[in-house]
Length: 298
Image (cartoon, rainbow, N blue to C red; front, side, top):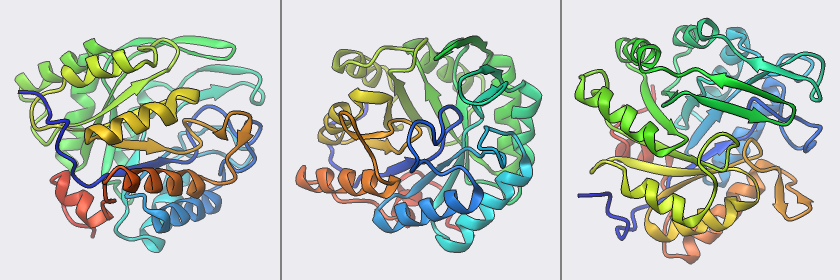
């Protein structure tokens, strides 16, 4: 039995404000420094977002693995919007050689594994569910997410009481996670992000989205993470089907074609408006925690 796409529960909205790729050169409203990120998340929290998906930057606006920067942002979010679910992306992003026009390779597995030591602990850490060739602008590299490495990372999360969100970029990635379920590595609730439209992953189309939804296990929660111009139409499709969505300038810097978003809160506000027009109410962070079988905020 597959997820019931006709059951219109409340919508969990995730906001990804920053990301690990483009920066203010793509949209000046994209927050880079800790205070900017915290303020953007607070605005999105007030607009209706329940989950804060996090990446951080150094003082020059370049993606970083600095635990100190994560510490500053995590503390800021828990202080200003206490119930909001904090979720850190374990891919971190692309390391730039000299500004946004010279991207290098991804971050090392050692740097990514170090996210287990974040303080305060985030509510969730993402798991990239399969290895593939990641492509972005002028760079391409093998994004190594073997089942052996993911097993080590997930076990570390389990030991620390951190839940996982499983980011699947293709159909085989769902099967990878189910093998870890069968092996007893994944033991908690299953939360999937169906990432479509990334170069190197499954292309964005309604047919591909439906195929991925059909492959999900019974009882799992799921959202779509769609990149670029397909984000709005496919998000509307998901809302009509009972799924959850992610918005934010990590995934799409535009509000309309050729028109930059003025803030991440603007993108959340539109998602809330569309969801309600489709008969879906918005889950509060407390309701989202209950829906995802998570502990209450500390």
